[in-house]
Image (tube, rainbow, N blue to C red; front, side, top):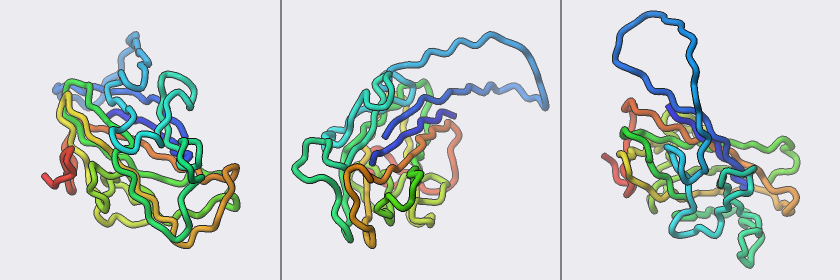
Length: 211
């Protein structure tokens, strides 16, 4: 299982590990071994995250501590004339991130979003936020996790065969949210998890279509 941690400010990723499991059957085994791990640039990792092909102006690289780490900012730093999302609105940003399977096996990806703000009084209280595939908004790539909105409605896993990529969009619902300043931006976090075992539940391909 490969895990990638992601902060949307609305801000960073940290690299997790990859574990290979063989076919031998055993109950318990313990052995001391030397393990060499290479921490790759974001674009060269087994599960690579890059700027998307559509709304990539909201994606930033190198802003989260090196290794080409990627983050999303919807707070005016993207160069857009606006400084953030409006209140009582829903936004769909297609193609903000491209995810690529650069490993040797097909994987199943989920990327649930959660609130990472430490001070709730300084947030805009976003109602819902999630990643989706291609332009198929309404199908959160939350896998088997409870979504940001506290439900499991419509959630799915993204299947990524070896060497394939998918464009991920980002959805934000600000219904009932209060206005914040740029200094009070709400910080969201997402963990990208890729596993080789086919999970239960709904699967979608890189076009967002149900498999």
